[in-house]
Length: 280
Image 1 (spheres, rainbow, N blue to C red):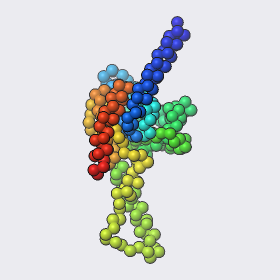
Image 2 (image 1 turned 90 degrees about the vertical axis):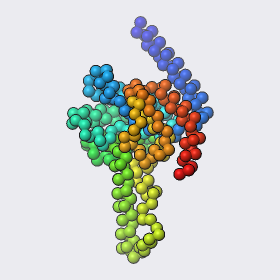
Image 3 (image 1 turned 45 degrees about the horizontal axis):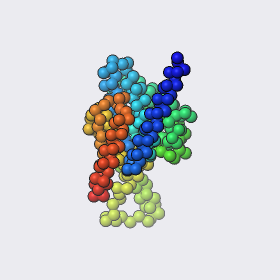
Image 4 (image 1 turned 180 degrees about the vertical axis):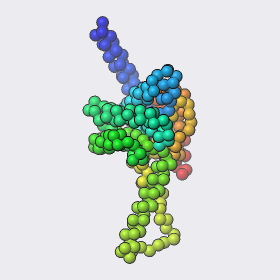
């Protein structure tokens, strides 16, 4: 009986995978987003709604994340960014913060396994944010993951941890000023520096090159679950022309239907978004 059930489940999965690939084939006729970003909102509310143990919602949310990543990379989306842990999340209770750090460490280790989604799809992993704020085990695990996937080139996954957009901008301005100061100091020492009031010391490109997310293009789509339309200090610099989609489902409940809907809507308004970008 168990063998028959196993075969039926395998057959069902095969049919579902085939149908999904057929749908993606049809979608590929239209424009495909290059970069999708996710604000994974609703894990704690999911836990409370179903009276689960603390942290259970985040574990279910991780499964939802794996499904979203699979859909993105199967469709041909090259860049995916997830808002995993905000700097503001450190204000939560020490017990909850430690629980999230432990979960993060466990999931980072999973990414390093040979059978992980990262290795199946050839994904390079970046951890974006003020990583100095992370505890040592998580920070070292993040560094190992970035090093282990550095040669992967088919797709990119950016995991924003200890991140806020205001911190990213502040970091970029500070780095730009320090770099420019070093250049001026070097020129002064050789007697080759002549100030020019008509030339800006710091250009826009200087700041953009020092952003945590400098390696990725601006997101085409930002998806935030739970029906919230706030960006919550996420990719503020990069999202001026992004399409914001806010399904009412909580993050652990997001599925293929919501993913399909946002892609269809993006393809419908792509011309409008491109026109807005050209006006800048």
